[in-house]
Length: 155
Image (tube, rainbow, N blue to C red; front, side):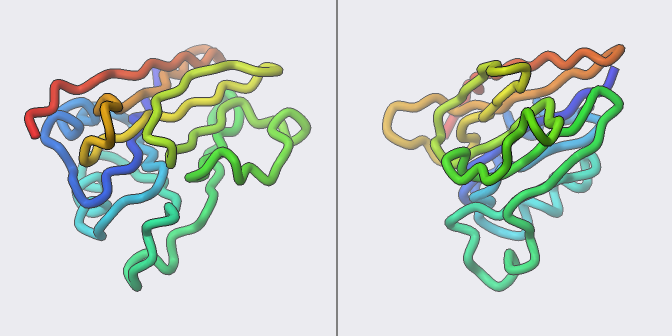
């Protein structure tokens, strides 16, 4: 089984609870609004990292981070972008199995036309009364499943 850890909208805060959840991942996806370069270094120390730039990632260190990324898995393609409203492809026509996004701070898992859409929510500073969450994709024998986990974040 392949385990892909999902995190987004850290906004400069990488919580110990999020790190604990991500440990053991075969790879990690960060859906943007990273906040600082040190977060990427910490995540890369855990597992290979795929990352996209969020609308708040405007500093020089983020200039070369792409706005979207593809990951090719045995079970199909994973497409990553920050803001789902800016999805500029037709996932069904392009054979995408999973679309990972961030931006809204609202965790989401939904399937539409055979495409799994997942937003792990926000793992950074709490926004309004939204939960602090991360997610994961599990890939086994061509099947992809997912889950969102709410963190009991202390700060």
